[in-house]
Image (cartoon, rainbow, N blue to C red; front, side, top):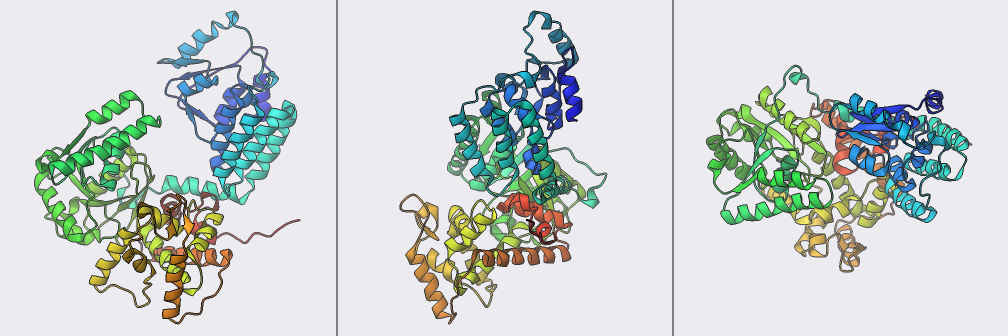
Length: 581
């Protein structure tokens, strides 16, 4: 391919790239070898190779900073996110935009070239705005964001070479780096994740069965989760009716939803026209009859079986018989919930992760009596929302929370045996997680899990080796960031290790007669990975997950398991690496 692009770039007659759909990776490298680029307004352009553990290998890192500013090129190559055609034109990557007939627009653009100064072959041009200080600042941010990934760091090095070396030398170095990364275990792991995510939303029983994505969606419950689900549906172009118990609660829920939409507008996720359309498509109400016209209704109320049962009974009464009903439970038995309904075939589990308008993963839970139509409708909505979907069987916690509960419990055992929360968190962050499990608990709020533990204790479900440490913290009002204290002390604004938490842990070890021992980071991660993998194996044996790849997808997208490792099951099944000189 580099040889083909060199012929195009060096041709006597200048080439024009006419771009529609997506010009990604080699597609954009081909377009960069052309003298000019014309694109439909709907087109996207990018060099996403870093997401697969690679860098561009056919001149992308060398040509791009000669067409757009070096900082913009660094962002595109080391960040990997595509840009829209209009943004590309603002950067200088696209010379003209087409509204309808792309070929006609490209031909008309070509007819103007005689009156334009010839910019010459791209590789013969100088690098644009090579501000070394600005480049270094941006490179430092991107390198920090990369954490343990190799490809973004190689991308930064390639762009730096493009700014400092002759084009021919930079091209040779880029190709060598591309070939080296192609054989890197990270690239193989990321390719595994790429294909696993694209195959995750398939279910054998739905082969040949499809349903349109619901246009009119009802959401019951306007708390943090319900508001996030409503906003996700609005941002995906759905009409949403949100039901709360009282007019005051409906007003408060509406404020949460509109706040999310305003934030999306402020961050450039949507424009003013899309923002207005979302507001026009949204209704918050306390009148259940307003849900009569929805095609799919999702309950997102308190995680209590009796509360959810009452809501589903109400939904069966006020919605049409062909309206699909969904429960957003995190742990409850969806088959048992369905059994309380007049028509259990209507109920599907849609387990969103918070914040629902941001998190990409959606577990579709398959209760025993659910109809193919209800499952297909849930899957169609998930696709419309842009979610990565995994089908899960019914069990306590499904896939994601079941595995998380297992390794969280083992982390609590490690606390009693000698580890401290900040040591466990540091081991997880060093491994590649965005945060440790105790930082995550402080962020979510310790009182939520506490309430669930108390309910399970009342049901006689407390294990014999129960760890009291989290309960003691909650009894002291240490509910996490929102309370200023949790596993960490936040009084300074930063999470700091707290001697009081350490005292509670030491007292519990003493009370149980446990002799504490030191834990190295490697031993901590070995324990966590072993529990994840063992629970994943059990989930596979029980048929809760259909494929091992689904477990990797869930752990990466729900809890930040580092993508470049391929996920816990993939990682376990790889041969050990042998160090070379």
